[in-house]
Image (cartoon, rainbow, N blue to C red):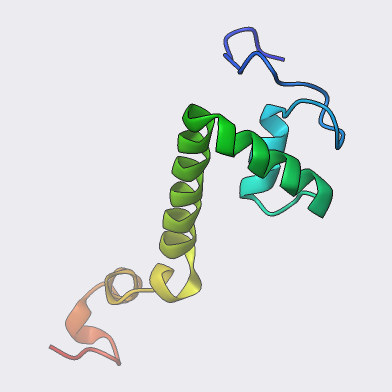
Length: 95
């Protein structure tokens, strides 16, 4: 573990009855935890508001990344114009 990372005092090894780890929090946000571990993380978050705020921030970051990186938003008219070299020369140009 990086010594620069500050973690709550009650973080542990991540099994169902152990204290919650940083990896558990990330796994929770990413939807990668077993149902029993989800319940443990949710209980932890309910009693640790600072950690809950971090998790909410990560969830918002994930939503933003999904929106920005989705295929529908990656291929915009401006990226098409760059490929064409000139917006007015693109087949699908509509002023």
